[in-house]
Image (tube, rainbow, N blue to C red):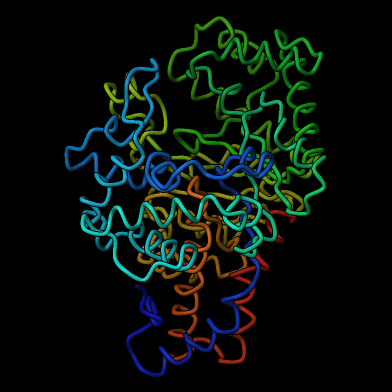
Length: 466
């Protein structure tokens, strides 16, 4: 199923070096500091329902490719927002997926899936229309066994810690259940306040009111609103959070006066913000969140550049996060300047920048992270979470930001079984890059093993305070 030398250099000495480096780090524990797995899986520890619901229906990396070839999301079991009919027969969904598995050839999703099939389920034959039912029966049978329940897989994957991501108003019941269960697996949360900082998000005013109810602060006032954020951040920290996460359309930041910010907040609550004012408010809240991070120590992650829900018809039928978020051009130099002028020289603050605009790596992101003490570069994200994307990242950022202004790898996935596959890809690519540096005389051979360990394990633990 899988070539043992996959993703290593083709040249002999570099390939041998990559093999040696990989052998030293391949079995290190997985640190997964940011992602979207469901904490309920680990809290309840119930069997996964069926192969289709494990691999197809929840994974927009997979179903967007099938959708691009005219296959209906409803036929793949993707739920409708109105509760209308979609395919619920897991075997039918799986057969449709298997018949079209060839569409994923050459993609990272194909490599992740093959890795999962082989390493998690012990399968040694390719998925196709002819093997679809055999695959389905085999995986379905495995899912009935105790060793394939979420906690058992967590331990088998050698996950040291995994962070989920919850909205600011989430009650964190599953994290609380986990904490009270006595299980030793470490699952922490992350504070995602988009729903209460984005005036253009549906239900913004209601979400802010709920924030006030949860904390006891008057969120109809600017000061009460900020205090409510501080209280919720503290609540999340009590449930293991070491980071906040912010998924804005742009990387824009602002540092408004408190009077101007309060006036803008009032317009946001009344639904009177223009698009420009809404963007300014989001930008100011990034700076406020950075200041709160100086108070409470949470790492600040910024995930900008996704043009969300590009298809209005798909949004209307299936809702958010259904494969139609598209990358867009993103400015960082001008956009981040207000925040960086306010707090950028603080070494006790960590701001991790991600991008969907690779053109910004060498021009903007690496130079910024290569000088501001607070900045670190997140790994290739989403559309660039691929062997080629990882290699481009190293090639375009190392010359200016070095290795130690980056934060290792995080998988940022909803697909649980892909976690070890994704980390394996990152480890192989990093070993290939280091081996090439050694073979070309740009890195001493005795430095490479320490770097490989840091890129695999140490940098993520340090950056995310895990």
